[in-house]
Every structure is written in structure tokens, then in C-alpha cells.
Image (cartoon, rainbow, N blue to C red; front, side):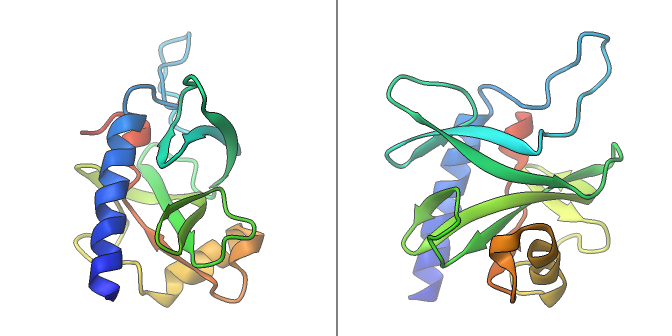
Length: 158
């Protein structure tokens, strides 16, 4: 059962990130420099099961809390997930909700962000990342959340 939920979650996230690739919050700034940080209150738009990062007819704007703990160019975002609906930004399937996202040092391997020192590792069960989400997002206190790196769609990574 747990495997089925994670498979559904992964499929949803891939579809979600593909939709997000249409419009990126990391566009080039007017002066040509890369604006690689997402805003603290990143707005996404939800319509049914679809969540995108640009307005679309019938979609409701939702604030996705974003904490830029690392500000360097060699960074990316982990999404923080919870089984608690209260305080979440939106559901991704079953009883899993996105609470927010946190920028850390590391690199993307395709569309999956891999924090520095954790390349090729599943970070979702690691206490360190539960703690990072817990310190960065109030809703995630007491290890109520876990992290995942499938966030490349914000930057148009296929």
C-alpha cells in the first residue's frame, strides 16, 4: 500500500512539474542575470488536481511557502510533504500534501534536486531533511514532514 501511494505521488509530481515548466519563476532578470531564487510566498494556481505556476482560467491562487536557506547559484529546492491537511498549500494525492519548499545547496539531476552530499540517495526518510523542513516551516514542527527533490519543473527542467 505504501509503495502504491508513493508511485501515485511520483506520477502526480512528474505531471505537476511538467505543467509548471510552461512558466518558470526563475526567469532571466531584465539585466540578464539569472534570478535563481523563488519568492518567499511563491504563488501557484490550483484547479482540481492540477497545480501550475501561472494563472489559468478557473484556477485559485495558492501561496506556497518558500524558504531560501541557501542563496548561491549551486542550489535548488526540496518540497516538504505532510499527511496533515491543515496548513498545507495543496494535496498531491491520497493523504499527502505539499506544505512548502526549502532551497538548499546541491544540484539537479534531471528534474530531481539532490542536496550536496546526497547524490543518488532517497532523502525522504532521512531525519536531517525532516528537521530542515521542521525548522523552515512551522507546519512541519515535530518531524511532521518529509522532503523530496522533484522540484525541477519550476525551472523548466524536463
